[in-house]
Amino acid sequence: MKKLRVGVIGCGGISEIAHFPTYAKLRDKVELVAAADIDITRAQACAERYGVAQVFDNAREMIDTVPMDMVSICTWNISHAELAVMALDAGLDVICEKPPAITVEQAQSIADAVKRSGRILTYGFHYRYAPEVELLKRYVDAGDLGDIYAARALFLRRRGIPGWGVFTNKELQGGGPLIDLGVHALDTVLHIMGYPVPKTVMGATYSEIGKRKGVGLLGEWDWHNYSVEDFARGMILFEDGRSIILETSFALNMEARETLQLSFLGNTGGADLFPITLLNRSDTPLKVYTEQHGALVDIHPLYQLDPDTSYHELEVRNFVNCCLERRQPYSTAEQGVLLQKIICGLYESAQTGHAVEL
Image (cartoon, rainbow, N blue to C red; front, top):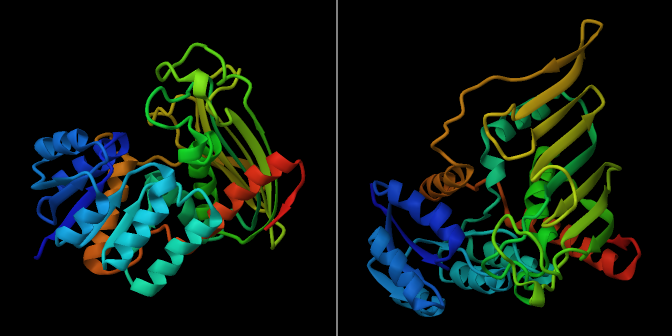
């Protein structure tokens, strides 16, 4: 079998957590041929660690110079669209870290490039690949919860402002927890619900903690230059009448250090995904609530999780297999546009104080 030649653009945290290590485990399927980063020393360090032949400080030069089949884009949010379009138009398959972009127009430009090029693109929404998410999706698709008419999505941190990178820089990232954490929770809920078409959003954002010095559980953040929200909440209404309530934070005065919970309300059953407070995968990851034989019933599915395989690894493995088999991964460019419309609509609503029609 011919190996896929892969390059990585952006050699920071997420590339070292998810992309480089997984590609290294898939040496029978892929060959790491190039890495690019605006900090060439960072690219060189990753190249030495993972045996990458060529390094660049310019992504375009890498794409123009090195024969490749696919790339991982692991850069600042502001550059996602430019790099994805560049790679697609060069005939490469692309896995781009979330969010799709920082504007709807940018997300649409990626979708247009996918259609134009005929290549495969997916986004780094790794929670879709969690075994519990895939199991709940089977419950929902089989009709076991009936029609899901409402959902709640919580991804909250008590003091989880990242003390590294550019996560608190609005110009480069497009926002704070809404576009960083909330986008994961929202995408997973939309995936379970079949990605309904959004109609109206109403949002509110707050920056009450991040702009002053405080206790950081993820390192000390640059509070002097903090330009994003630290808490966001919103409601999304869809064309078919369904709705989602979303809350997400980098910093919030609450009891738990971190909370991730996705709740689904159907007319014959409901479910909670990740009803946990520390992202501890040993906790019950899925609970289903329904009626059976005249009684209310709680179902806690039991199945084996592989503690050595992260959701990130499952995502990258799936992308490689899809490229080899020429099939579309879970997340699509069109879904990226819908998701971007919701995120940008919530920010616009928070700024104007009015609901936004999408």
